[in-house]
Length: 461
Ligand SMILES: [Zn+2]
Image: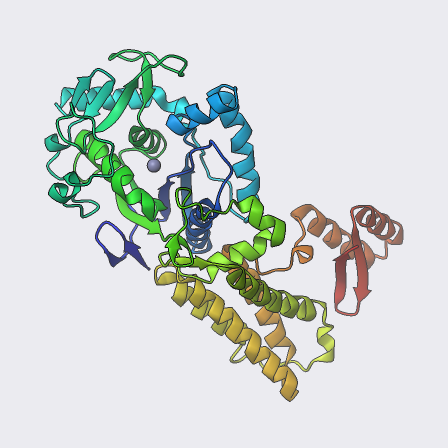
């Protein structure tokens, strides 16, 4: 399968380091405020990749962090007259809730930066041994001139950067791009002891330390939003490769595109900014996930209510199709001969799209094409039961990745599914008492059963 490696700026044939296993690290949010649309897009983009790797049978170790110490955390905690850990403990569950609503699987490991301070100090010590750091009055800095390849990762021209630099330039730094690894403590700020004095880590070192602790010196894919490519990821590469070697750290890099509003980048500083909560008040979070899926993860999303309305209509079309055919008594349709099944074709086309750098819009196109084909057959009176069966199976399979296509009420958990099976067995054995008792039990859980000649259908009441 092909993925677009944003370090090499091209599509490459992807082969994991270890056969059958994939290790991913995705930069997570700084937890000082509620998640915004950009966070949601990044989370969904990498969730889809993770799910597709699982769909293809890979084992996936997916690490995504919470940054729970930095200037923004400290400022916000001070504003609210709470401690930094209190702020983190307040905001982290909010992220978990919003991401959960977007159908994002919980990461295999979700490290908090403050749990990895020792690892950060280890890496800074190694950088010091190799002559990459120097101290100023306010902290320990990475000397970018000591790492020849600094700038190469993100394709930055350092000379250009030095003019009109976006980085706040401290006069005493050796190079304007030098970045802080360890900040010395200031009054009222959280701090940890270190060989250089009490203080706290800089942002970039956090991800180098957490990815090393959880995934080792080398792992398959490092991801994040495009806005993190420089300087955050450039700095991560410099630190990690300076310690662990040139071919260490992420083997491939993937970045999701921006959210734009009226063709401008959405950002707090421009004031054109939406939290997920604000959008969830107007739209089902599943519509928001579907909206993200409609655009390739690397392209910008031009966010608007029109886009959300289109997503809502598209998702409803799939849900209605699924509901209608899932409830249909298939014995009313003729059997087919099992040839040329639309569901099979849909799955092949879905896999072709997804194998091409996770082309989710192509994958959705495959589903819509199947739906149109089945609907046309129905209109023409040529629809067969095997076509319907294969279409429903295809939607279920695709939804292992998209996690939004099956209408909410039509998904049940394993326990309920097991109870329905158990009751079917009881009925087959004419154990009516047991069958009735399971029926009552399910009813108390809001599931109503309908015994048809094709088996037992269920619905939520
Ligand atoms: Zn990071």
